[in-house]
Image (cartoon, rainbow, N blue to C red):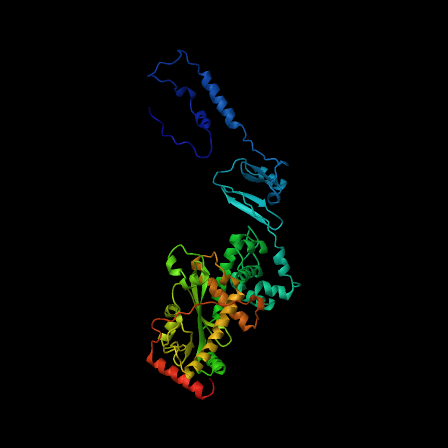
Length: 478
């Protein structure tokens, strides 16, 4: 049997329009190889069939109209909307009138648009051949609106954000060009002040994201995204301004400040390393296992390290974040940018003081650790301890101000360095602007000190340390 190769018109005309132009008598419906069912074939049946096809093709296509059903309730989110087979249809009379005036039949390739009015503030538009149900949960923003009010007490504002309103406004002004977003067809953008407030409140309180969501009237995933975005903005915008290694002029001021406090010349910073608890990672678990904290707390502990160098005012000038908690302080130091800076000769004629966890090097000044120290060595150790107390107290204020550093967070391990770096930058801003710390926010710091196996790595440093101890005693600084 052969099939005609005729191509049917593509302009939507019916099969009958083609047959109408042909001679009905020239079309044969019989099969010569097969005996017909009846002997006499009536041509009138063919004409009747063609007439019925003509009548069927000439009938207008009826459009299905969806009438609003008062019994259907989709809540305040979808007021004045109709639902049929999982789709919402606009029941607005003006929209319906415009639909009636349009073509009765539209090509399948056209995209259909359904507009859902969630509330007076939200208009959600879903475009595409496959329509979806869009829904936004209404959340209360009463707490944030109260805190953001100018009438909110300054003491309560400080307790919530660990800083004054003036400092908070300054941070918002600095970050606005980076974190500001534009309104879209789907929703209104979250204001800059609310974005920054979500991040700072989360860092200050260490509360779970669910509690942050309740306080600010935002989704949990939105709050998590805002924290990471604002922390990244702090790292890119505020860190170059508030946390940088000092230049020559600033270094001279730092050395002068430490010499006035201890009598030891050429001290450019006080160094300390602390640990931040984390949840057991999925990979390299043994590397993050903190044996010393586990033994002291009688509980399995995992952590990452934060090494910092501060000036006489407790302001960070260098930080190294993110190395596993199983590493010792001297191992973390060798991995830091500070160590690389010293190897390049950038710390010539400059001492960085540390505790007994660090080795004695040409640029690292540490106390005497052997037993039966002399009176001169004992007096020197007390002066080194005075300098070390500056960095240790700075880390105590850091963890006291930002509670998230004392709790095991659910953040991903790769996101923690940015978040912890943002905490150090915010700490510097508060210290520079003389933002005091409430006594009830104090935190006692516990970091075990382990003397490295090779605690003396420079003979020249041994002689230099002895000379410093001798001068302290004979110049009545001890």
